[in-house]
Length: 274
Image (cartoon, rainbow, N blue to C red; front, top):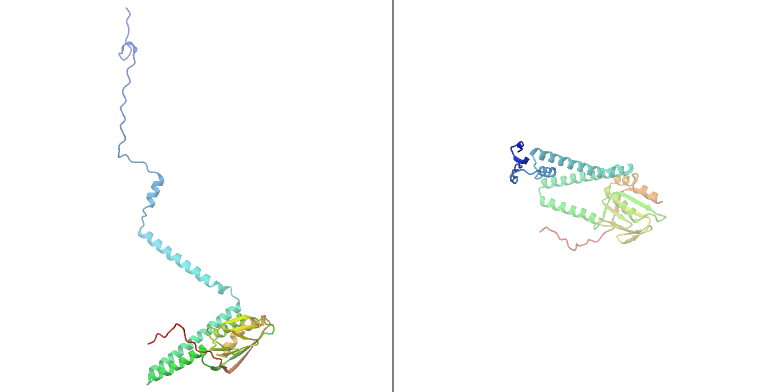
């Protein structure tokens, strides 16, 4: 009879001890925090926007600064045409501005004198009637319905080659007006606000009436302003000479402009005075 020894653990027959049961894993707690990605954190930081008072002030200052820069750039763009102009063009523009300023000053002085006369006149109704008649005469001269005379110049353009175009004569009228011309007549045609030139060189029309060279301008105005305006560098006389035409200017103390335009009744406009 053999003696069998029990193995360690006290189990007979050398059997291994059973494995201990593992505890069952339950579901994760419902309140466990979810992981947030970097993109989600970025979006959460950007929206909804959180604007402080300091940020609003900075944004307003930047807007004002940008607006000022835009205005400055636009102003520089407007002046670029003058910066690129020739010296003779700048002289002409300056001369026209000086003449226009002087005419405005004279008009202001005349209106001030009229107001003073009305205020000091014992018979204001009679004085107002006189001024109304004078104003009517002035408007008639501008409209070409009234003959006029006064100091001025005679401009004669001789065009033997037929190179003078209609736009050159129109530029001549514009230069004269800018220099203070009050009444103009070209080859017996009264020039008014809506006068137009048409046709080609040698066969030019004024308001539909054909005229031939030489072209003679009778102009009433201040001769000391009219003649220099035509003779400045780059002006009318120099432009005509480039086209092989000649322009002569003669001053006179009494120029007569007696070509008339019929008074036209407006089709639609009516006086608003009662």
